[in-house]
Length: 308
Image 1 (cartoon, rainbow, N blue to C red):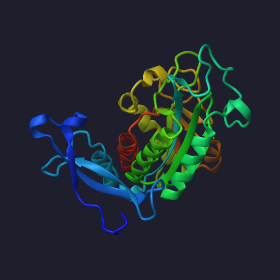
Image 2 (cartoon, rainbow, N blue to C red):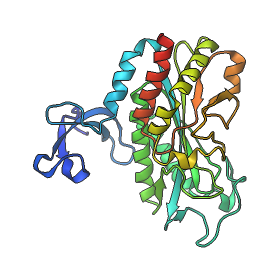
Image 3 (tube, rainbow, N blue to C red):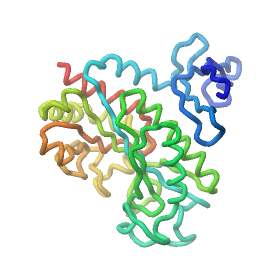
Image 4 (cartoon, rainbow, N blue to C red):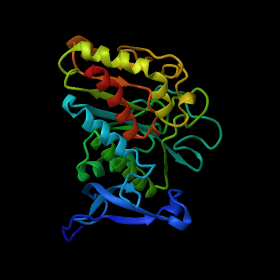
């Protein structure tokens, strides 16, 4: 805001978003995160809000409240996150760059690729990266993914709920910038059926204890295994279509963890195993996952086990 004032509580018609009945349609917007608006004028800001009922309690759709409670409960363990957000560009109902009929060349040359007709959408990716940096988001990098038209950006390392706040703003910016190119962004878990990679949001997690020793990492992995079914159910729509055991995934039915294993449910990076301290990577969350839900569940499961 050019006037420098802090954003205030606002409201909206919840019946238009299926969040309230028409005869009691008012919902409350409470600002919880602001950053510079990279798309408009100097001094303008983007405002992310919590949704509340008119008695100022969290709306049933407000998953941020759950994440905040989990983070506050285990704040002494210093849980931290980095999320690898995959997504797919679409145009005219097909992944960007795909022929109108048939398929592009098989997967292989696109991952972290460069050059010519293979790397479609890079101009959007570059514009999005610049916008995230200008907004002050903790964007760590970008890369082309395995399927043509599929890309990734990474946000972190941040505590909860900030990891979710910045992820939602980064997603919004991606949608908004793609508009200018006549392109649609899909976060579908399996955007194209068949022998093509799905889209995930691999979630990296650490605590003060995991950064100091390997035993805490083992404890966290074992706790995730004991609670595997609940996590899978909360990790995004269409997860069973993506977690098939193929295309660099573990099956949704069988939990596993291991060092350097991209086919495991939870991967321990080789550098972490070598150092015997660091972080773990939960590879199960979908691209369409709610980062507040995922972060809150991982905190509850892992930090709860580490507190025992």
